[in-house]
Image 1: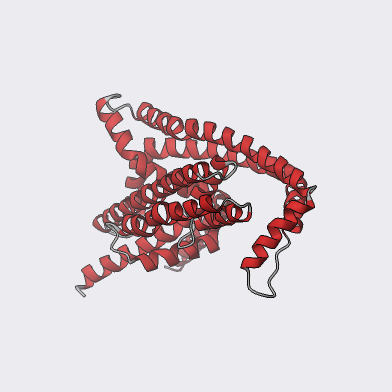
Image 2: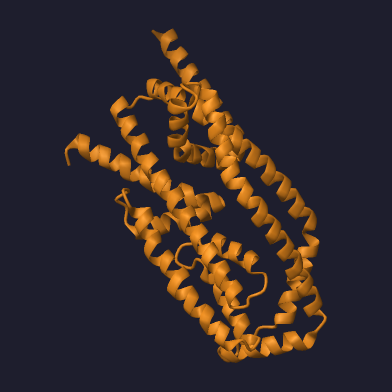
Length: 338
């Protein structure tokens, strides 16, 4: 009896140590694993259709075709958009360098901005631009290092999606066998998390694409330089709840006012509020809350908290954790008959 107790203590202590070590090993890749799992859930209907209709049960081929479709759908547009953004970034950088040598332009712009600000608050545009140029120049090496890291992470993401689609069903069965929860409870958790993942990814990314495209069109129509670059920036900014694309559109409107393009500035203001802003304020909460039974306010704070805790991937992890909590509470209430 004593030997049996010692063996159990030793076994669980060893299991705890190994688990901690494995968590430490996998932690640097938590972003890749979360994104891969989420995209695998979204892509699973495509995989299932290919597996039933095209490959006739050859799972690795179905997974390969699904990943290929994913790469083509994501990488091809990103390649052309990325090329345009890179060119416009160079143009914008060169324009900043040229303007930095023309103090009168910055003095005029600073004067126009300071007139609209409260008394005692002043902005030196020339100094800020100089800091920006200096920062870009000093971080070129870091930029290329980050680019290489992003490419490596993307390759790992593709590999993880491939295996999750190919072997995900078997892994889920194995997890069900070793998990102390009942199969019914586990299936309910996975089902509700799958709904949440689809709503969050499809909703969030769909809104980002729509807002980025509309913002880019508005910038191009109303004379904002490098419209594609700022359209992409607006799409990225749309991930920030409440504030969203205003981070990009407001400076663009102020730029048009400061450069004397008043009618274009008012046009961009109307465009940003009536089209871009309405999508964020109306469509966003509807998509994120649909089928999840979670209030939009809780979703907002879960996104903000997730970003604060884990960075950009928190946009996805925050609502998923919230959805998991709601699922567990609903299961408890059902079993306890509350």
